[in-house]
Image (cartoon, rainbow, N blue to C red):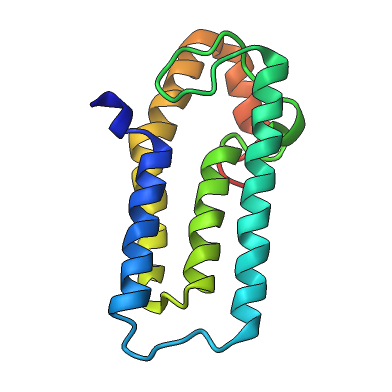
Length: 149
């Protein structure tokens, strides 16, 4: 059952809620047309690109990408120079993009809730593990690189 408490499962759950809202409880609300499809597509594409770039850095560093597992190395290169959590940021971008594309106006409220859950269930714990293992290196990294953007 532990596999259920992973970021992709949370993302799928929030995407399902957004889709249900759009298709069954739309109340004729709309973002207003083609711009939402375009911006939504850019956000989803950007999210997928971020995941790919982050996965490449994990592979290069030969450390785990799986949440709650101890990292063999701290990654500060590539996309991790810009964000300490690019995959979680990507998940939020994908959620936002699909909310726009599906015209799930009322589901916008889910976005900050999703970010809050991801931060509290995964980010803080992972950063605490890195802080304990890499101490001064992680402190310097935190001074240079923001948690999200």
